[in-house]
Image (cartoon, rainbow, N blue to C red; front, side, top):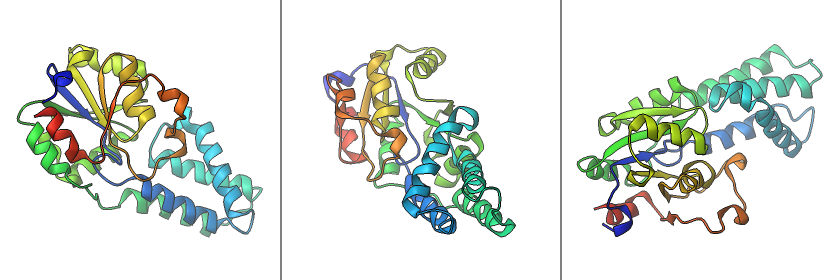
Amino acid sequence: MIEEYKNIKVIGFDADDTLWVNETYFRDAEVAFANLLSQFETVNKIDQELFKMEMKNLPLYGYGVKGFVLSMVEMALELSNNNVSNKTMQTILDIGKDMLNKPVELLDGVEEVLKTLSTKYRLILATKGDLLDQQRKLEKSGLTDYFHHIEVLIDKQDVNYSKLLNHLDIKPSEFLMVGNSLKSDVLPLVNIKAHAIHVPFHTTWAHEQVDEKETNGKTYKTVASLLDILPLLN
């Protein structure tokens, strides 16, 4: 174990694209949606407008598949000037249902890491999105027994993590967050003087991307895979 982590008591793991595949399914759904509505606009323009619609609706619907589907429905109505067919609407709903029914594909080394660390630390799943969907995915994953509990956060900003640490009754220096998003899983923890390890995923949602100036002067570790955190914590 490295000296930096000697006081860690609780480790929070992000779920989507840290423990299992998720963003890939959203990208596939965006392609399917754009092709479905291509009679009204170019595929690239549809993709851009759908993202804008998601951002507009985020404060209302929150994160997750259900909000994404509602944004697709609204976008279809807008693009078609309210002339979209019932069949197309049904296809949009089917795209969403297919996303919710996807099998949970664990990323490399996940179970080995959780099994090893759960004997020494209290592990929690700290994610954002739809509670029912995240609980369903955790159950499908077979990883439930490794976690003390699941925390589904409304958002992952400094204030949300501060409230979480108060709930856990631990100091920032006693908490480590592990995740794929610099914006959601790393930088807010650095801001509140907690610890964070970045485990990049090959695809990042545009909303989660940060520019270089946002990371300047921020202290955190980046590893190539989840397995690489074991030597740091054992």
